[in-house]
Length: 135
Length: 320
Image (cartoon, rainbow over all chains, first blue to last red; front, side, top):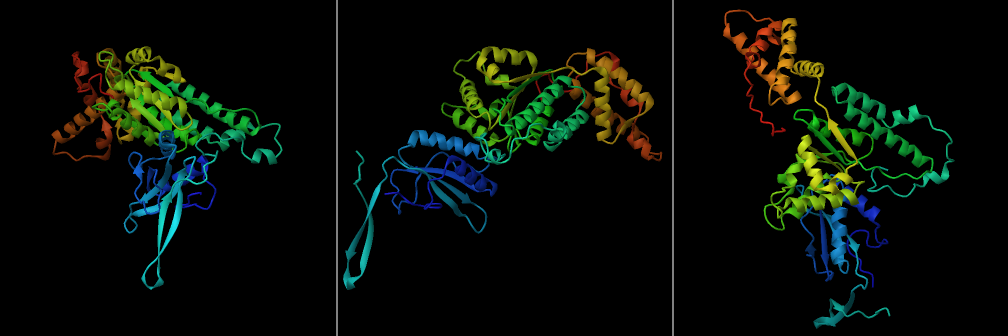
């Protein structure tokens, strides 16, 4: 199952050139660029581990790409995402976030339905062990 | 083209347009802004012939690389790391700051910012502090120029566990792997830089351009002095000019002479004496010409003419 989260999630994965341009766009807007990684990409798991500190005073995206390469080297078997945080007044939130690395074997989620009083339904997303293990 | 981090494979346009068989060099040079940049460099910097020659060579290489690329020939980005060596006050820092502008103008670096650092900015104070610190600086310098002033302080031969070595290793790695992203310029006084390169051969070989800054001649120093005065809105009277020529000839032979910096300090002291001379007589009416003229008395009052060495508060080690 291909995980889709954040921007560009229905496009094919971005190439490094495309990532570079997105990061340059973030820097040009004065956003702080973060590299985050996790092995638990559950939709409710909002806070991923940070790779180093946010990068906000760079002139060129090559610095971010250098850190990303290093993060991929260490955590290539996890999900890695880039996010751009806009600290300006009135926004103060993440403006862009997209996945830049996936593990070879993606995680699987399952939707559980539970009927409760009054025939209403509760939905729960649970992670399940990988089903389609490629031989 | 400038927005791409690396020289990408030949762009698509090469396939559509038929390859031109000949190129008009003059048009190409003007389109790339090389002519204007070189002229500006010639006008604004006095002397420094080896430096200008090297900049011209680099600019020519860029131009030819561009044309080669369009002609479908193999082209590879040149290595641009430089080391500036020379005596105090020969303009190393000034040229480094200008070099970023030139390289940016010629399209060698993408952003053109200069990050000027010394040992303190790169080397940490405890184990594990150096690598993040150095990387932080490197990331900031990406797309521009990293200027390391007095680079020999990075290496402390007397202490083999010094963290400077760690910073050097990270620098070398990035200088090698990300040549397209960043230009590193090392600067320092000649002899100590030679020692530094001798103990770090990796550095020497990764730097393509070793540029020696020569001492200025007396005529050049006079020209620099007059330029500085003009910038500050002063001029020398005829007698003062003569005295200034003598001053330069004398000052050059004395210890702790640091070229253009000594001239700048001398001019600042001449301004002090001129102001003092004007204020000493409060009863006269000042003309505009009085305000902007440095008289021979202001020059001749210098201790240089007294025969004693001048202590002008500039130790040989300070490069600022």
